[in-house]
Image (cartoon, rainbow, N blue to C red; front, side):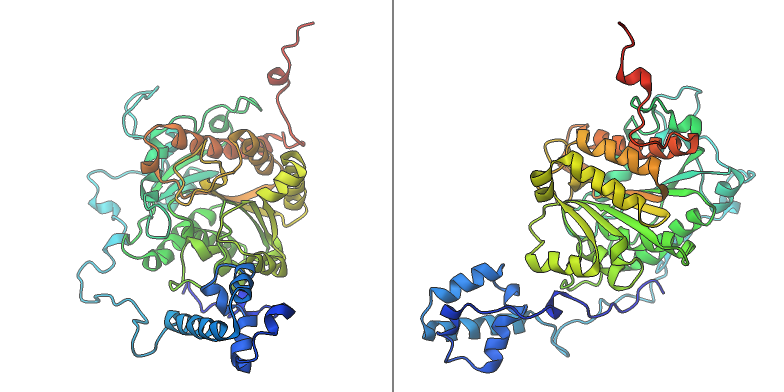
Amino acid sequence: MLFVAAPTSSFAQQAEADIPPQIMSKLSGLSDGQIDFLRGFQPLRVIPTREKLNQELDRRNPGQIEQFVADMMMAVEAMAFRPGVDMAQIPLNPEASSFNGFKVVRPQALNEYLREPGPFSVHRYIHQWGGIPTFAGALVAIDQADLIAGDVEVAIVGIPQSMSSGARDARNAPEAIRSMHILGERDVYSMVDPLATLNVVDYGDVAVDRMSVHRGMEHVYQRIMEIAETGAIPFVVGGDHSLMYPTVKAVQDIEAGEALTVIHFGANYNAEPTRAHFLSDRDAVYRLITERVVEGDNVIQVGLRGSQATPEAFQWLREQGVKYHTMAEVERHGWDAVAERIIDEAKSATDRVYISLDVSVIDPAQLRAAGRAAAGGLTIRELAPLLRRLCAETQIAGFEIMDLAPMLDLSYVSAMNANYMMNTCLSGVAMRKLGLDDDSYLDPVTVDHGQN
């Protein structure tokens, strides 16, 4: 089974917080249990920060504090699961004739024509403009036999899932990116044409249960694994970021004896342990770490600035060994210094690298169609060189772009920039194959006009 019970590691297990002396002097009416409650993590389910909690306590007299603490404890208790009262599982209908209908693969015998295994074209013209869109205008492969017969190096696959948190339009991202140009075009910085260097295919879309994140995860896991088993690099177009759990797990399980470095780009740290659903985009990183799919010290996070991250959250990331890079770090040290630090960490970690790019890492001024956008992000000009270097200077085992919600941007800009980020990494992979993996390689003709 893909899902296992996660360890109980959480922010709640951290050391108790001290209560300031001026507040402690007003707590004589509280029981030891109530004081322990104030020192623990539970009040932060009601009051957003420890500082705010102390302010609320400081401005009340002892009698008001007794009522305040009692009400907080009552609220925390009301939030918890109640055995025999609350629904512990979401019921399914096993009598449904189409119970597994969403993931049944079409048998080849049902096709009107038979063909030998291998990638094939859906285009009528040599230079196709319009027609049936495919990722990067590439040939199509629909099963593992096609990947093997075609000696495919990169398989781009869509996963149209929108059932997690945030703006729920990520299911339309694969279609939007297929219809947009730029992916598969020449990289004008390195002068590398990725499609002339790499054997790339469009591997279609992976089916998901559109009413349940959980039901589709095992199928996603199997489909990504069947790509990785052939030696091809899966390039995944999500879909919301809960998909990071089965995609990373599939790539890791292919070579379970070798550690995998995961570089997670995004505004939000996605390691919240307290949500009612077992898996969502908000806790995919938490699941991967606590289930030991990847070790915390092999996780690098870039661009964090979302308001969900608390001091306790950052402390938990530190305890797991996660190397996180916030926009506050960028403000303090500058992007060039932070980018070099990320490169050094990636190259000194494991041999294989998986990049999980949530489009929220980009500032909304340049990519507004992010499911959980946050102001103050990276620019395309900052992110693209880092992606190109990561994909050229490390051994990429997988790449994914997640949480593009096309309905939030009626222009073409968000889809164009998402495609550009994919093309930047694809070009980096091609550069590595060509041996152009030196630090910050740029083609000489692009950086100087050569005139006296």
